[in-house]
Image 1 (cartoon, rainbow, N blue to C red):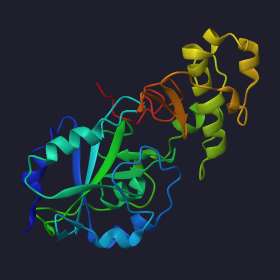
Image 2 (cartoon, helix red, strand yellow; image 1 turned 180 degrees about the vertical axis):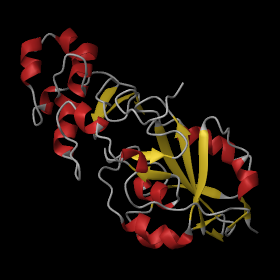
Image 3 (tube, rainbow, N blue to C red; image 1 turned 180 degrees about the horizontal axis):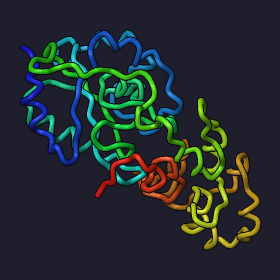
Length: 269
């Protein structure tokens, strides 16, 4: 039995989803590519044991990888997992969610291209996109036309340095990203207009505890996170804030992906 791609694709609202396929010849590259941080791990972690490519779903060997991109204007929106699972249940196919190098998979599926800011630019929704993947046990896809893959730089980035000029910590360079600067600013940055995880903590909890002054918090930098203790149902893990074990939306730097900081990005409503 083959997977009818067009029939499967029609289950997803085109205003919210982009649907594609990771060709079999790219499986190994995606599974063996390192992941910076395994946050929001959901499904079978293919990177821990590449031999699991031979796993089965309901007794059927997995051969088909479905790539899903969901339009999202929120920073920590991972509702796509539950939503896509409820949609796939209607398909009648056997499936299972997988976790691997999503950036690599999206590029090699043809659904996105890496931009100068190191983020993947989805062909349909630009930067404001979240990704997930599933494996299907029915065999291979039919009624599917492979998309041309661009392993190079996004063509919209040619002769454009919006993201470089607008990065508040000068983390974006022409040929490389200073991820340490970026991560530290997101977590412990001080800026008049851009919040950070540190100041989210202070506004939610820190100032109510009365243990530290605002001036003391301002001096905290990377390595001082032992002070950031989340009371009650709050927690922080790998740079993500959780409440009741679910990721919550917090303000932090998104200068490299927001309109109008990127003049080439389509405006999302």
